[in-house]
Image (cartoon, rainbow, N blue to C red):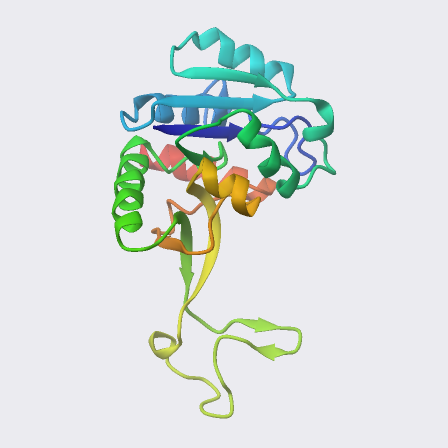
Length: 224
């Protein structure tokens, strides 16, 4: 059994009301888009929408869909100071069996076909010895910290060809799939041997800042 977990906390500081504000002319915004995608994915059996935002809860309830369970999350688990680790520990109190696909409304370019493929890849990865899965964006270039380069060695070549640099992988928060057992064992939404699934850049778009929202709107309208 696959249950999608969709957290939508109240009070985004960087993009006010980002879960439900109109997006590219769509009333219900990112929440409506994501719920339509999750509902359309036949491999997803249940969808848990967890929020302390009355508007999110009201919109979700208005869909009246049999796949959806609404969790009216306590405010102390939906504040600006709530950590992801705290929320992870909360999830098994809502979903007590099967496998959890954790995703976000802020990944609008991941659709039902992508989720279906990810679940299939998860099934296959379990047979290969992995215990979980998460989506990533490959970063292959000149990556530095304040202390210097971290993706290549300037003692070997100061400016190597980018295709010869060993890639790094940025977690794009598109999807995490793991068993309820792993949540309980590791207090994490992945196990200790996750399969990294590289996504194309458009699928990895994660709306976290106002510029991200504007960019994603423009890209969405262009793709229509």
